[in-house]
Image (cartoon, one colour):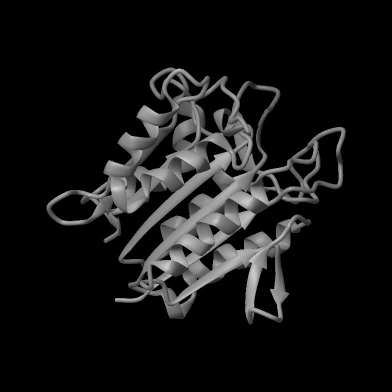
Length: 253
């Protein structure tokens, strides 16, 4: 069974009064992309934004801008394309996320793209775009990792108290068998940047190392990775959360 990945790291934004530029997402995304390629189990790892490194004959995630149309097209391709049907898929996103509240108090969450506007224009709506794409997809399994600077705006700290945001935005992860989401932090928390990578991605990469694999099987499951990342970030001002149903998914062996 083939495995495919989409890795996105967005540093730069057009409206800097709304979304200030970040320093780590491109580096985060490239480190994740390299790790996935080095496992030798992924048929293709797509990067956004990317640059062709001619001397090394490969693409690399670079600081830059990615439009909402570019991100949406990439999501459609990997979630609904014929090539990935019944295959294993991993999606990683590093950048800004935000939430808007309408006049009657309902919230809608977005993944920010470079051309995102304060009213949500050009951003990726979790409710109206990502969730329908997830529901329509026919994958063997899916793992999504969100290292958003405002990930707390995407997932509520207490689902029972914030059900109106959780269910419209990411209900597919409670309905689709073997679909698994890891987000960088809880509601009202900020996903911090560290010296080399974002805190969450640094913990992620460390948790995916051979040292952290199961001593008997050599495997690292999504649950095992989440437990490690949770321990690693304890006391650092952000706490990752997860959603998903189905079996324990193996990320690497």
